[in-house]
Amino acid sequence: MIRSQSLDRSGIFTHFMIIKRIAIIVAFFFLFGVALYFWADFLYHKPVESSNDTVRIEIIEGDGAWTIAKKLEAKKLVSSQYVFLFGVWQDKLRGTFHAGVYELARSLSPADIATIISRGEAKLRDIKVTFPEGWTVQEMTDRLTEKGLLGQSFFDVAEHPTEAMLASFDFLSTLPEKSSLEGYLFPDTYFFLPETTGEELVQRMLQTFDTKTKTLRAESRSQNKSFVDIMIMASILEGEVRSSEDRKIVSGIFWKRIDAGMLLQSDATLNYILQSGKVQHSANDLETDSPYNTYLYKGLPPGPVGNPSLDAIDAALHPQDSPYWYFLSDPQTGQTYFAKDFEEHKRNKDRVGL
Image 1 (cartoon, rainbow, N blue to C red):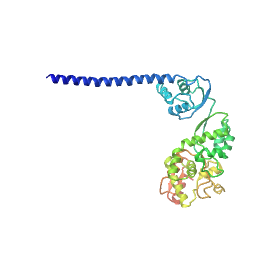
Image 2: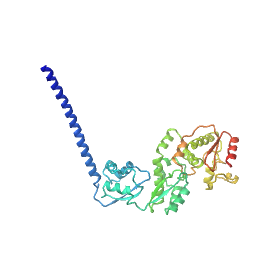
Image 3: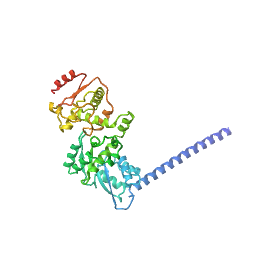
Image 4: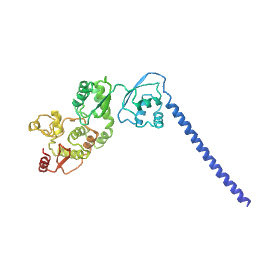
């Protein structure tokens, strides 16, 4: 009986010690968490420097808290991206940031910076420019000029890029000699300052292309496909059909025609030559003598016929097999009609009034 009571006391003591240790560990982590919270809050409200020097930073449309935090850390406006992210979480600012170019003093705390960007304050007189998918260099030039930016300078750089510019991006290194940058100026919404030079305009768009197409370029290499050819095909698909599904089918048709030695007969290439948006071309149009005229010359044209979207690039890279050899789009609805032979294609043309 005495031994049994002794064992009971021993078990109770052991159980007590386990609970005590757990309590100490929990208390330690609790106090550590509290201390970490207050330390992060302190850093969030403390400027990195006391200097009134300013730093220019651009927030692009679609930039999330993580991206912005990394940009701020790279500019040394915050001591750590995680401090900024902590404050964004604490102040419930996620998703409230405004795109634009900001001039920020180094004497601002991360909390001040988060407030400024969430309210869209301290933005410079940046000009918002949107380039629709598929637009050509000429159309982009006209839009820039309309916005009061250096459109002609942009055009000159895009049409005659320097060797240094070509060497600074790996996707430009395989371009044929004397190529323009048509196809590689990513269509997106940008914010430019009025004094932005033509070269800076082009550099920004090339950098965006570089970032956005990394995965697709890697896949092109893994498939041992020419990315130059992929971009030419993508630009044609952009101008031919609208939906992702149809683009992949048309991609399959075009690649199949090239392999079979057939003409592509793409209206998108004629529109590029004639700088028109015609749905149907005249007999004279079809005879236009240009290496871009795929009604006269087999294979792909010498270069892209516009600056395509990611969706079109993806379709060029992932053609879908089908029994079709012809297609056309209804000019009213945009619906695509496919045909297995020319007779069926003619019936489709009658069906939509072409």
